[in-house]
Amino acid sequence: MLVAAIVGVLAQRVHIPYSVGLVLAGIVLAFIPYSADLPLNPDLIFVTLLPPLVFEAAFQLPWHSLRRDLPLILLLASVGVVLAAGVTTVGMHFIAGWPWLAALVFGMLIAATDPVSVIAAFKECGIKGRLRLLMEAESLFNDGTAAVGFGIAVALAMGQHSSVLELARTLVVVVGGGIASGALVAGAILLLAGRTADHLFELTFTTVAAYGSFLLAEHFHLSGILATVTAAIMLGNLGHLGAITARGREAVEAFWEFAAFVANSLIFLLLGLQLEHQHFSNIWLTAAAAVVIVILGRAVAVYPISWLFSRSSLRVSFEHQNLLFWGGLRGALALALALGLPLEMPLRYEIITVSFAVVASSIFLQGLTIPPLLRRVAARERESTS
Image 1 (tube, helix red, strand yellow):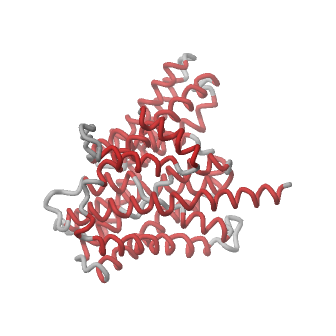
Image 2: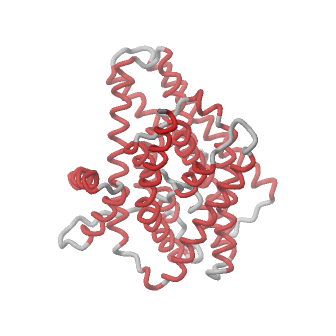
């Protein structure tokens, strides 16, 4: 945490994204003798660090704005993920020579976007409004879609053959059950929070909601991410009806902002520490091809779907489409899914190493170039309103 705070101050002074600074700090720490050998495992990311990140982002989403753009967001988070995964699967099969099922597993785990550093850049550049909502909401929902699709892809790769009808039923149960789990936990928490005006108890209830909804859904093999997203949206938008006091909401927002900061810091520092242990020299050509293929997959996901809404009230300007495309960074979820692959999974080592390469290149390449683009858009919007 001390390193994270120092890096954060330095990153602000030299005007680089906080996430980039943390990854660089992690790489430096990996070469320092007697530095802590901290493991980066799927449980740490998926169970411990992901719920606060998801909850903090979803808690801030205004339902009235989200509801208006929900058709576009859901299409990007479902069909968009499938398109991106499909392009990546085909590319890794024909260009990298991977078997179809191994390519499909990689395509699904790398399809979800992680806008942590982009949202930080949004805050730094003072951009709010619809673009930020689209970026943040899409990433929250497509995390859930990618995790579900990844589970199905791994089952197929491990020899568990299912019919199309069975796969469709599994998808509906996992997604619907995750949303229901989140709604159930949030409903119970709203009832309990309404019985007290103490902000400490209200803060405790939201912590239970964030982790409780996730763990409940995962216990029944449902989508924990969608459960936490649902619980956070309900608490964030229904809490003002009397369940959460004004002081309690201030405390909740401040606490979860800090919790997300700690989780982000740990993830990016651990990523930097682990990069030193990855042997990219063995498969650098495959990794480079994967970086290009994943970027192409993101383009196929964003531009055609945005074009479908070009003549409607949900139209997205071409400039904003470019930001949605280039701001689709990869991050914590991809690493958690890759590290959680079964030991007997074909090409497991290659998938993990290439995933690290894609995430690292995404953070450095897109993370460093997106802030100037955002500042340019912010300046144009200020000029148009003045």
